[in-house]
Picture 1 (cartoon, rainbow, N blue to C red):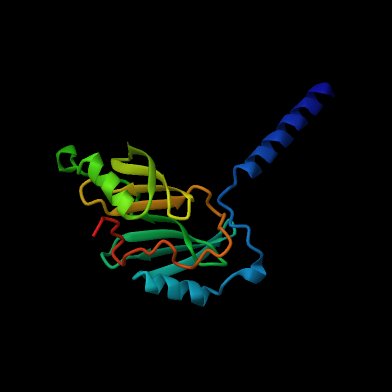
Picture 2: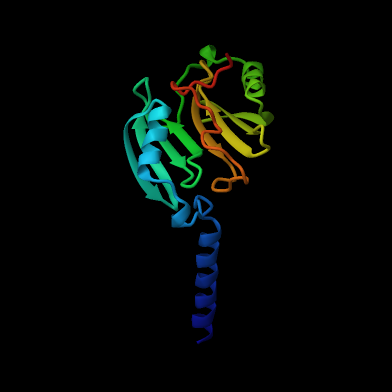
Length: 181
């Protein structure tokens, strides 16, 4: 009996821990969701085609193609239609080291975007920037090391949106480029 109670307690604790790690949830009441037509219009405005719209973890998810034909996967806040996570292709970079731009160029690009950089490192063959955006939200951005085009973007606070957040706050160029102009 004692072993049974200990096992039940441990399993209950693990179940609770799993729920605590489910930070991908948008947690927006259904009555506050914008329509699928509005999501489709937002995807078109981004220059995405062949958009397939689904829901997962309380968020809209869009699978589409950008103007360059690359696969795009986006997680969208259902109330504001703000992009909270974005990935082009598989999120990996395949660039020989001799073609990489220096870290100083990555730092400058980030500063041009209004980001306060905490750390620049490499991940999956890409530069990975951990920073805060102009609204002081934690972000993680992967960029192609040769072109500095965005490969992946994510708000670290995931589903949280500050009051008054506007749709399209990320202001993505149609081609997904994040390089400084």
